[in-house]
Length: 124
Image 1 (cartoon, rainbow, N blue to C red):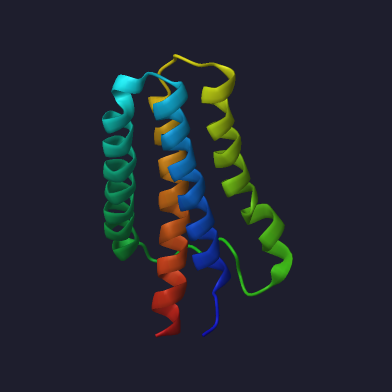
Image 2 (tube, rainbow, N blue to C red; image 1 turned 180 degrees about the vertical axis):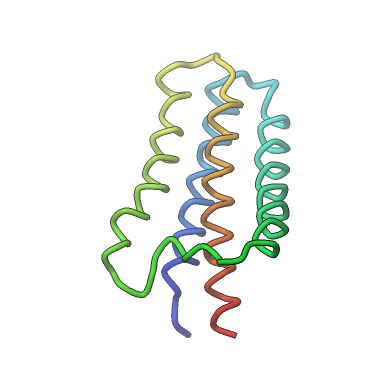
């Protein structure tokens, strides 16, 4: 079984998003942990559904984040690195509300998931 780079990118971004939600729940406001989980799940699902509907109407589909050439790999790997750096913010600034960081990270996660879905659909 071949591991597709766009699927690996979506998986690594998802793991970084989980780490962000957990650090925001532990080091941020602890009463907001359920809110953070719901925001991350809801926004990622909404992004994927809405982006799928928009792409169906598009004349030209956007290319995947990691094309067949390996040149795009270092640029695409900055997305999980950015989400991991977001996960450090609750440790540095404890007791704050980090919902906006979670929303931004969730949109980046939805972007990588849509890229993996486009590549998977193109292979079939």
